[in-house]
Image 1: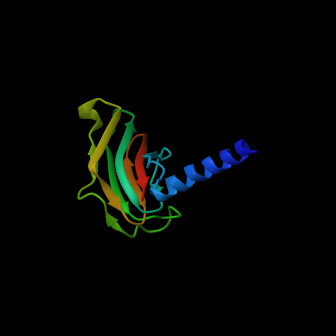
Image 2: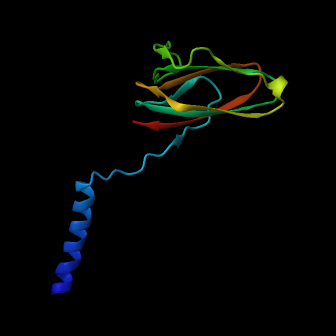
Image 3: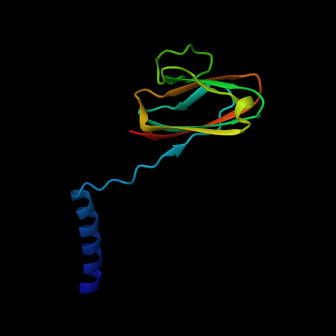
Length: 132
C-alpha cells in the first residue's frame, strides 16, 4: 500500500516543484515553410534570426521585410520595415545558389513578418524565427 501511495506522491512533488521553479520549455527557433513569392512568414510577435535564400544562380534577388501580418496576398502591406534597406543578393557576382543572412541580436517584430521578394528568376526563401 505504501508503494502505491509513494509513486503518485513523488510524481506530484516532481510536477509541483518544476512549477514552483518557473520551469518553461526551451524556446526553439522555428523554420518557416519555403516561400516562392510574397507572403507572411510568422503571425505573432517574436524574433527573426535568419533568412536562407536559394536562387537559380543567375538572377539577383531583392528582399524587403515588413513588421506586418497579412492573411491574404492581395492586401496592401501596412507596417514598418524591419530592415533599413532591402537585401539584395547579387547571384551573378557570387555564383552561389544558397545565401544565408543572420541577425544578432535578432530582429524583433510585434505583429508578424511579411516578406516581399522580387527576382527575374526562380528563388526560395526560408526564415528562422522564434515567437515571444
